[in-house]
Length: 71
Image (cartoon, rainbow, N blue to C red; front, side, top):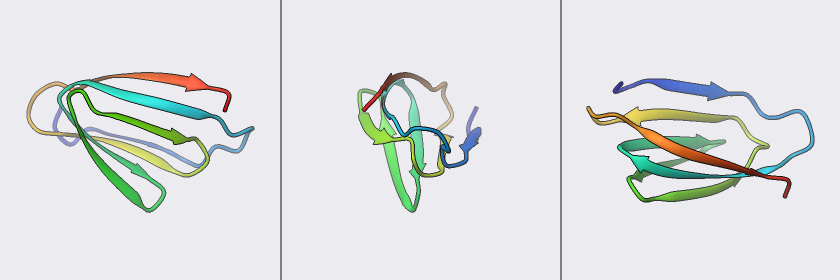
């Protein structure tokens, strides 16, 4: 739903990388002090070492695929 938000604190374990592919909808990703606004088909690759928040933008559904990598 529009405005839905998930927030994660900085990861305290061994850092790892993840890649988020936005399949449907619009999504804002806040990674530390940076903000990225993604549309369907966009991809964002980032480490899990800073606080992160995901917020649904727009009125439609939002679906994404998250792939985790050790580095």
